[in-house]
Image 1: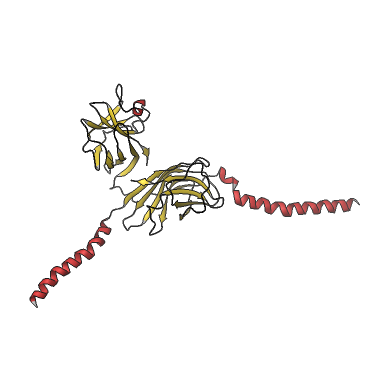
Image 2: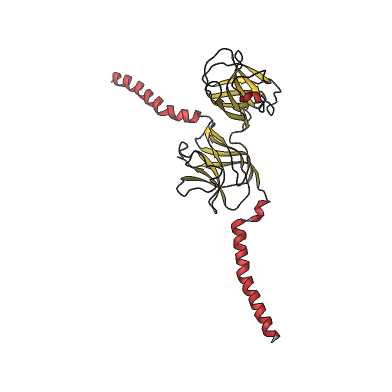
Length: 169
Length: 146
């Protein structure tokens, strides 16, 4: 009698195992839950990371504020270690006394079209042209983690023509 | 006879420059960055940058940098024929055209993928980190001209 119950129980156990194990394996295969905490890190080199070509460090799209402005702003590091800003596909409106600045990314002044007071900024020079590709040297030691916004700025009227938020390349 | 030669030489020179010109230009064409974009993804937080390079030989290459996504089963890198994939559109429509670039090499770190020859980048404008098994879009990077 007890023997019979025992075999019945063990048969049910075997059926449970026979069904349960494949289901668990299938579920594991489908969801691979261990990947939630196992990372797979890779580190391939850039396609043409030769020392002689300037490497982009940061880039961002220019957006218009007081005047329509568009294009891309990219910070490059050249082979001799110097950093420079390059504007490409660039268009803004022409104006008086327009400068290129780097400003603090979190500066509330950047939300306005006309800056009241002054911007904490790094001067890169007068805007060379209101259209076209152009480069501006960065002063040595510019902290790009802090000054992470490019500003096309009319000094005379404190007007922000456009800004670009730089993000690491 | 002499006149014939006289005309043949400039013609030959012209043909030479016309024929060789583009070839030389292609050779000259330096490796170049064509497009770039930032990843966004909420469901499986995905971040980093996707950049498309054109190598000297014309080969297109996708490179992911500062890249991070969640690890998962059967994750692929694809280009989709869309301007972007919304954060809440976690699943791709079956009608969305795609170009397969290969299995995701790692869920963290810098990595390169070869783009098949003849891929029309003006059509395939978004990179998607895509879980084939569950048709889930982990994250997307809309590409913009560099």
